[in-house]
Image (cartoon, rainbow over all chains, first blue to last red; front, side, top):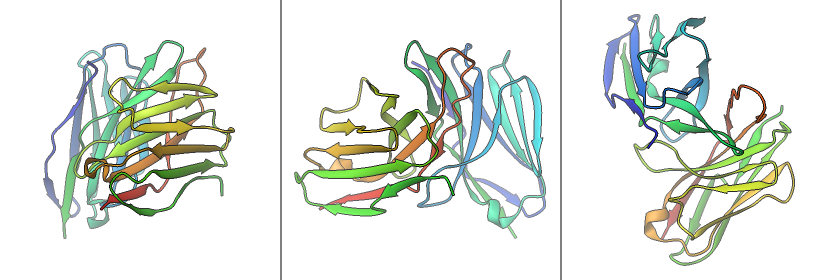
Length: 114
Length: 117
């Protein structure tokens, strides 16, 4: 059973702080990792993807991947109230002759307090 | 703008009355996915089309069917909706090649919220 685990939260941070979201996955062969943001009642929106060990930065967002530890994280610097949402970690699993499919974690609810 | 479009945004149906949800895309992606997402839960993959090949998840109920008449369109049919089928249904697309390292970046439509009365 392929699994993706996240702390459900809620994670509460003050405006301007760094929010740190964590995710672990079970399949050591996974190669593609994604963070989606989902506002209440809306569909998931891709904010970051990462394929290689290390850090990947995009504006206020940094994704970190450690394949040896099967761990991926998302840091949000200078958090804003508009960042308040559920953050979904997703891991791509390759299925022979079917392409890839994403397995999602249950999401971490982030609340940024003004 | 190229995008994934789902219709309708909100659908109300009666218990047991068949319903069809639609998804169209202008991205020319070869893979299309249908997810079910219930409140405070992760999106759950129901099935996906890899080009014309249909791939059903093992735990997807028989009540759920899908059609992909061409590259651009994909439909989700719920033959006899039950109260437990009330959820957000998400369509996603990706460009995927079996022969290469699959990035599988998926782009989601806005979703259809289904209510069952």
